[in-house]
Length: 356
Image (cartoon, rainbow, N blue to C red):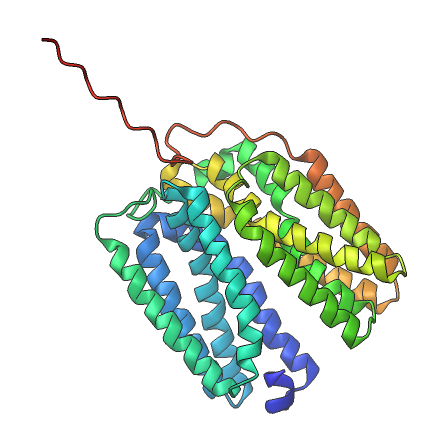
C-alpha cells in the first residue's frame, strides 16, 4: 500500500520490488544454510538482523526506485540468513518442541498485532521502529556467542555435498517442497477469486485467528508424521471447499486453512531437524527452504496466470491435488540420528548405590 499510494509507483514497479525481494530470498536460502553451519548460527543470526535493520531504515526513507531496490536486496538477504540461523539454534535446544512452540507463538502474535499498530503510525515511523527492533535482535544473537546450548551455535562443518548425496533427505525435501506455495495460496487465493472486501477480511481474520490458537499446541507435537499428513489433508479440503458457493463452506474453508497453516510450519521444521545431523542443521534447512521457495516462485506465477484467465476452479483443484500428493507420499519419519539433538531433556541417571 505504501509503495502504491504513498510513493505513487506503477503496479508493475511494485511487482518488480516485491518480486525481487521474494525471489532473491528464496535463491539465497541454500548458501545461507551453508554459512550458518560454517560460521555458527549466532553470528549468522546477528548478521541477518543487521541487514534487516538496514533494509527497513532504507525502506522508510526511500523516495525512488533505486533506493527501494537496495532496501529489497537487504531485506531479502537478511531474511534468507535469519531463518536457518534461528531455526538451527532452536534445533539444538534440549526442549526443542517447547522452544519452537514459543517461537511460532511470538511470530503469530506479531502477525496479529502488527497491522492494527501500523494504522496508528506513518510508514516511515513503522519502518524506523522495525529497524530498532532488528538491531536489538542482533545484540541478542551476539549474546549467544558464549557457552552455547545448541548444536549449531558454534561453527560446524557446513558442507552441502553430503546433504545432496542423502537420497532419503532429498525425498523428504521434495515431499515438503509444496508447503510454502500452499501456505501462501491459502491466504491469497480468496482475493484472487474476486470475493468482496468483507468476505476477504472475514476469511483472513478467521484463518489468522485459528492458526494463532492452535499453533502453540501443535508445535509441541509436530514431530509426529501424522501432523504433517493431517495439515496437507486440511489444505486440500480448504481449497476444495472454496469451490462451493456457500457461506458455511467458505467459513469452513477458512477454519481448515487456519488449521493447516498453524500445523504445517512446525511439522516441516521437526521433519527436517529429525533427519539432519546435529552439526549440519543449517545446510538441511537451507536446502529444503530453497526447494520450497523455488516451487513457490514458479507456482505463484503459473497460478496468477490461471486466475487471470478465469481458470480459478482448475487452479484450486491443482492446489488440492498437490496437497493430497504430498500427504500420500510422506513416509513415516526415520528414527532420530545418533548425532541429532534430543527431542526432550534426557532422564537424569540414578545415583550410584554405595556398599556398606
